[in-house]
Image (tube, rainbow, N blue to C red; front, side, top):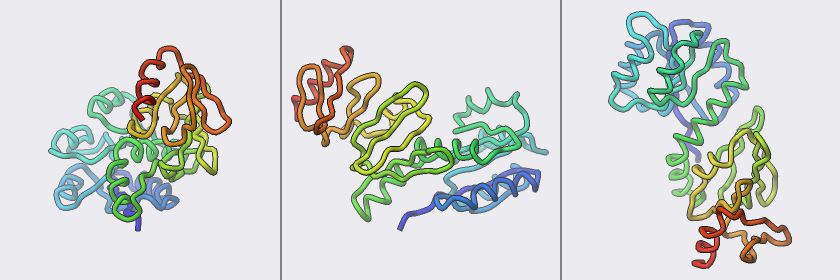
Length: 237
């Protein structure tokens, strides 16, 4: 059984909390562990409960959200939710996942959730699944959906301008992610970047030459700047 990520919503505006609750109610992957009306209440909650993700308002009485993060020894992953643009730089200096401006649309909210699963929750999600099925999974957003993709089903990823497509053994998924980002997310022992436009699954490669890789009947050119590393990796297999 998959373990849900636990989140805390921190905001001094009840309406803002209700908006996030509504967005979260549409997801099966995150559960609300609690809400807090200010940073001090959130601080006490975090000292008693393990939280994976915190949706945190910045401009609150007594203590700002930025000050709360600095006060925590081991803060959870944080998504800032605020009506003030001027805190964006400070937020990113604190390594927050995302910075959402109110009013928060569901589509923009989903982008932040995707970043959370790809960047922060990947290791814990993989470890849970390995215990049960020995499988690893990738979470990828396509419009308003988050797809759960078994790593062993990914055949290759192709970059097309500002978009990217993941090709699996049974489907195609389009996402607004860069190939460089996916190169960091996909395990290097199983995947190899062969071109500025392609990352391929090593286990699905059926043959190769000094300039091409083949997956079945499909041919992929090896980029000149990648060739030395690609051939060295393939010759080791």
